[in-house]
Length: 123
Image (cartoon, rainbow, N blue to C red; front, side):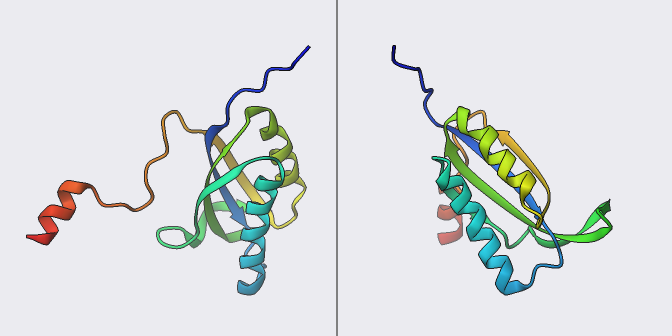
């Protein structure tokens, strides 16, 4: 009997990476998490690690760290694969904390100005 596999859904993942990770290793870590998502059948649509995110002070200490690097991922993935992605994020020692949520609608276009704003700026 064939099994039912639901269509991929849009997800948003916020990851806090340890401040002990150097800039060179940070790029590798960001790419590694993108590869982890792809390994589990997901498709990363957008990664944002610069403004307004990046390295920021935490509201409260987590594992004795006061700072962390925030990275935001938008991706599409089958719901059955999310558990595997979360398991691998928990095992990653460089990830201090993460939050994975399903987006209700289609994800907003990253940093794209609205058409009316572009027309006003041109005038």
